[in-house]
Image 1 (cartoon, rainbow, N blue to C red):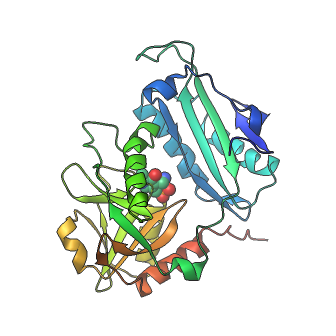
Image 2 (image 1 turned 90 degrees about the vertical axis):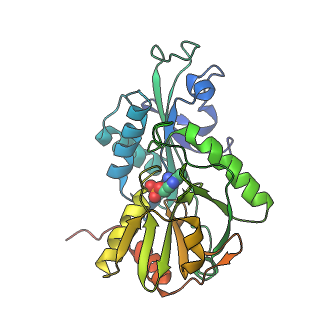
Length: 290
Ligand code: PMP
């Protein structure tokens, strides 16, 4: 993956993909002072780019560093990466981190870097295959208390528990892992938010201890536009058998139905299908008025 043709935006310049390097003594690598974004471009336009760039800056602020580019500059750089690589449908990965000038827990002397990579990454499955749903296991780790970690930052360090949980789930034959929060309420998956449906009503955990996904917010808006009732609330694991449908949402996952959470079965149904279709329509570039 680190060897291919193409270009990466790196600290204000376009550099060949294979030359985009960092020093081993990078603060972000040793102490986790690193934040990132995940974005998708559809038909040449990056969906909700403003929201992603603003979240990137906010994620960094929560880790006590300021990205030295404005939202408008980050937006322009993301678009430049797409054009330079001749991509129309792609995944973009902006990443910001503290550099290698000093070694120690304090990173105040270290330069802040920003790089933006892009690669072609089609939707996970074909729609028919996707509507069958994925199987999810239970995660060993819980999302931390917001008083223990900056839990709403898209910080690289918070993904440590996600990677461990996802590996364990994969070894057990599942596609992903469901994480609870520190209190034991249902939280999210390792890289996506989660929704449930019961008798036509949509239920999703309150985003008070994890990333309030841009896809999650979009799905809630689309659901309300369709007239569905959406309840954002605390959900306990013992409620899961009572739900009829389940799906996850995220920039990479888009809307992906879930058929099972560790022995509890769901039937991807009409609500999931409707929101999947509405989401795929929503991400398409808006036709500009002539
Ligand atoms: N939670 C986690 C842990 C994630 O990594 C992601 C993906 N960024 C999400 C939720 C969904 O966020 P979004 O819809 O903004 O991609």
